[in-house]
Amino acid sequence: MADLPDPVALTRSLIRCPSVTPAEGGAITLLEALLTEIGFVCTRVDRGGIANLYARWGTSAPLFAFAGHTDVVPVGNLDAWSVDPFGGEERDGKIWGRGAADMKSGVASFVAACARFVQETPPEQGSICLIITGDEEGDARDGTLALLDWMRAKGEMPEFCLVGEPTCPETFGQMMKIGRRGSVNFTLTARGLGGHVAYPDRALNPLPALLKLLLRLESWELDRGNAHFDPSSLVLTSVDVGNAPTNVIPGAAQAKFNIRFNSEHRGEALVAHVASMIAETEAETGVKFEMESKISGEAFLTAPGRLSDLIGASVKAQSGLSPELSTSGGTSDARFIKDLCPVVEFGLVGKTMHQVDEHVALDDILALTEVYQDVLRRFFAR
Ligand SMILES: [Zn+2]
Image 1 (tube, protein in one colour):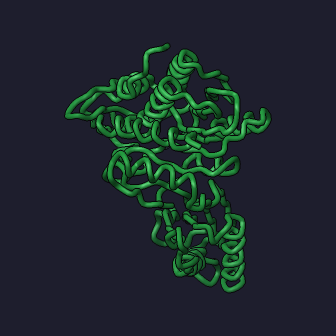
Image 2 (image 1 turned 45 degrees about the horizontal axis):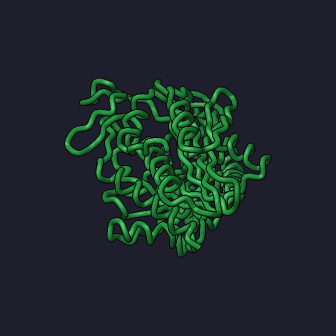
């Protein structure tokens, strides 16, 4: 029998791998070696220069999946850190470093939980797989999507997937994510005809037209939310003219905005609606608009059911808290996994993710490992 991995020590080892996307940094290699030793069959599913790992224990159904990523966002302002971001220092009952919260601790916790589970109480029937990518924080083109393509081709079909992203705002056990909002980014360019401010009749100022359109967008009530989602939101992020002189009417102006949308919408329908508002504004003003849009993910919901019940029961048993079933926050790779099987996210407190001096409580890592192990016990106890 291999030694049972300690989730805190494993978190530290992973933090010491400088795996800023797209660098592997040794993190995937380390996990591959460890999981092989525990009895997982490991397959590297690298694509486009990204390291990805699929690891499976067992051969029979049902298959339970954990998913996570080992890549991290850049350090940012190194001088502002009070610790080495790749040191994995322990201080004040916490472990510090880039990826401590998002999400090397989560990966370490599910690896440790699986190791304990298969050595202490291996199920007679069933398998566990780990879907670990090195490309979540980047383009996410060759990460989880590469793994899912490979899994579909091989007929690897999990019944459920639990993603170990940090999901708790303040306290461990507070929240799980049963869905996510979709997101679409827009860039608009208004094109008129520049000229001298003394002769506005010879120009076509794009600014009033752009403002008219932006106000129209700003006052658009997308929906009022539904049982599981807050109302969708449209947020203007930039208006750029870059017109320094005071006596020149600009020829063009640009604006950017983002829509975070709930399950009442599809990205394409939102893009079409924005296009119709543009057409209206063009007809009224004579100013022409160019629109670029990029849908980075559709909204999805894993309806409350067996998976969220399982996780909720394990969290309650460990922490005494009944986690809220939330759909708030940014996107994650769950947006891809939802096409394969029901997916729920539960992990640590994410308060410091992507920040300077990112850290997580050591006790929380141990608690999360217990929760994951308990989820496996409950899932296979049938
Ligand atoms: Zn993450």
